[in-house]
Amino acid sequence: MTYFCTLASGSAGNSAFYFDGRRRVLIDAGKNVRYLSSQLRWLGTGVEELDYVLITHSHSDHVSALPVLMKHSRAVLVCSCDTYAAVAAKLPPDPPRILFAPGETLNLGDCLVRTFATLHDAMGSCGYVVGAGRESVAFCTDTGTVTGEMFSAIRGSRAVVLEFNHDETLLKNGPYPYPLKLRILSDRGHLSNAFAGRVAAALCRDGTETLVLAHLSAENNRPALALEAATAALERAELRADIRLAPRDGMCDPVFF
Image 1 (spheres, rainbow, N blue to C red):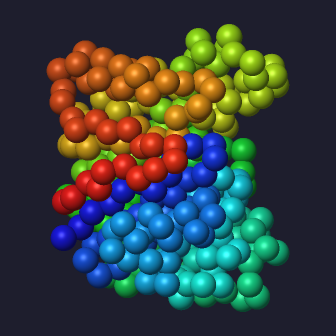
Image 2 (image 1 turned 60 degrees about the vertical axis):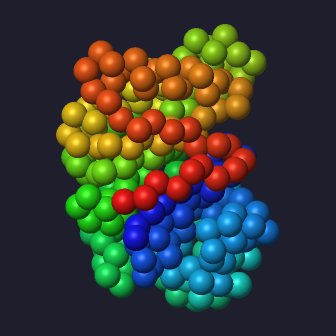
Image 3 (image 1 turned 135 degrees about the horizontal axis):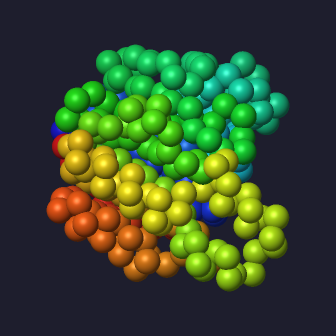
C-alpha cells in the first residue's frame, strides 16, 4: 500500500509524508518537531522511523524543524548541494546526507525519486517526483512559473501537489508592500490560481488523477477561489480529477494508490 498526505502547507510551515510500504519519506520540515510528531502519530509512525527527509529549498517555512529533527531521527537528509550549503551551519555536524544537483534521479532504497529545478528566490530550489509509474506523486510548490522542463518532469504523475498560492486581484489590492507584491508575482515568486489552473488541466490531460492544491496564502487567497480556479480550468478542458485542498495547519486526507 502506497499513500501520501500533506501535513501542513502555507507560509507558516510546509511538510508532507510519503509511504510506499517500506520507506517513510518526509518532504520538507517547516513546522516544529512536536507538530510533526503529532501528525505522524495519526499515521501510525513517528519521526524516529523516518528513512529520508527531502528538502525543497532553504526558506524557514520548509526547514525550521530540521536542526532538531536531525538530532532525533535516523533519517538521511536529501537536498540539493546549494540547499545544504544554506542550512548546514544549523545542523548537527556531518549528518547522514545525499546531495544532488537538481535534475538528477535518485534511488532511495528502492524508492525512485526524480528531482527538478524550480524557479524561486532560494539557491538550489527544487521539486520532487517520488515513486514510479502509477504510484508517483509530484511535489511542485514555491516556484514563480512552470517551465517546459518542469512540466516534463511532473507530467504523468498519478498525483500532483501543486502550488495555488494567490489570487492576483487579492494580491494586487492587498496590504503587502509593493516590492513584496512584485516578488510574489515574479517568475521566482509563487504561482497564481489562474496559472496553476492551466498547469493542472494540462497535467490531467496527461493522466494525473489527483490534484492537491497547496501553499495557499492566508492573506492573498481563499480556499474557494483556489478550488474555483482548478475546477473551472478542468471543466474548460472537459477533464475531471480528484481535487483536494492542503490545509495550512493540518493534515489533508491521505491519498492511497
